[in-house]
Length: 143
Image (cartoon, rainbow, N blue to C red; front, side, top):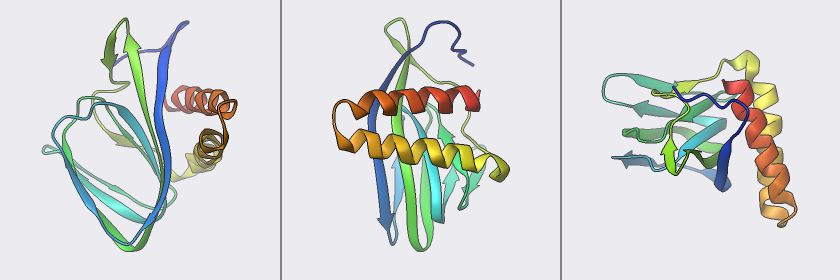
């Protein structure tokens, strides 16, 4: 597990908000870290040796380098996702070796941060610093 201590090299790749009716994905090697916050509907992730169901009000961390398949469930699937890289020198690293979901009782602080990160990211270049600041707070809470 990588620990961010006094210095962090972190970059936001993109932030999205989506509202879709169905979908799924197969990823052989994730090239970034990611947080997904589920607002409505949900996701079933299969990592081969373990599975995670992401329900509304929960956030999932997907580590750099992992492989998985996922299937969305529900009539409308609504979520925020932030893709980011963490660097140890010039190499990308994962914050944790395995994907994991937050507990529902922690969801309010993550929802506030990821929704504000999205709004800041799409607004303008000055807002991108707010987005990065929120991502760093999310990583801090997550660790």
